[in-house]
Length: 380
Ligand code: FNR
Image (cartoon, rainbow, N blue to C red; front, side, top):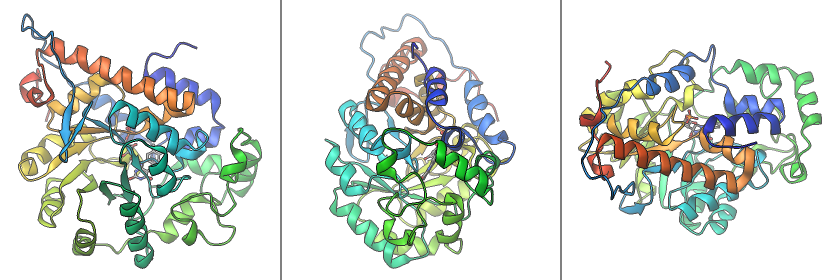
């Protein structure tokens, strides 16, 4: 199969993965309206075509949090990545490091932060969820720092797990134990032994100590619901700010007031995100929410964005709407599931190529020049 776009990678992943895993990656909350709008609102953004502006020296590199990167993108934190490819987090981190973009490791990864750090030739970012066990959270943060993680991405849009009906049907979550048993029985990739095929402890490296005996991935979303802390408030972030001296990025902000609160607690950045449409169906797409947030805090924070980005053209659109950098979620995971490290490398090359074309045809030579002036219209 010739793979030349995210659509192709998605199709290859669909063929390769067992249904319950593909649906877990591909699906969103409720009727998946926000998931759909993330993609379609972004695709609807019209750009101004400009000509004869000498675009022979286009440069898609940028600097985020003081570090030069080849592209204004990072790989988003994605849970269970090590189930889509063998030691999947390590494979994706290696591809990102070779390309010169950051890889962000999820709290709920198969490979733990030490393993991924060692596998990667560049420093990684680390994503933290709010767990009830604060002492464990603190220890995990210290581990991440000692492993050399440079930036902390603190995800705030999952105080409770979203209702994802595809997962309930496939047995990934909820009371459908029969579906779960069938899904587990069918999950037989070469690396099944080292992820424990759901249901064995130590499946999730970073959180193994709080998984409990034999809980593993049995009812994954149920486990998240039981261990995530819905009582967290902005003031609770102060101790994280005290503990983590490097860049602190608050992920999952969709409202300008929350973005201001993030700036007030001393964060360095925000990710405008609705978790890829996996949390509250019906909220704004990131593309729609982004301009107001960039206006509100763009001078105080580095504004990043994700949700719905499927191409280099989409990256340029997000930058035009006010983001300084973009996280790739499903796009990168489809590529990883399809072809492992080589797939992620191929995806990043594709993103670069598409960015270069979009920059040339909108008449911009560098990332700093990508702003609203390249939009044909800004939809409200
Ligand atoms: C995620 N996302 C996510 N975010 C996070 O902070 N921690 C996590 O563990 C996960 N896990 C996760 C699993 C899967 C399968 C997906 C698809 C997503 C959200 C992710 O970081 C990002 O915000 C979205 O994926 C962006 O949307 P797109 O690019 O997938 O549309």
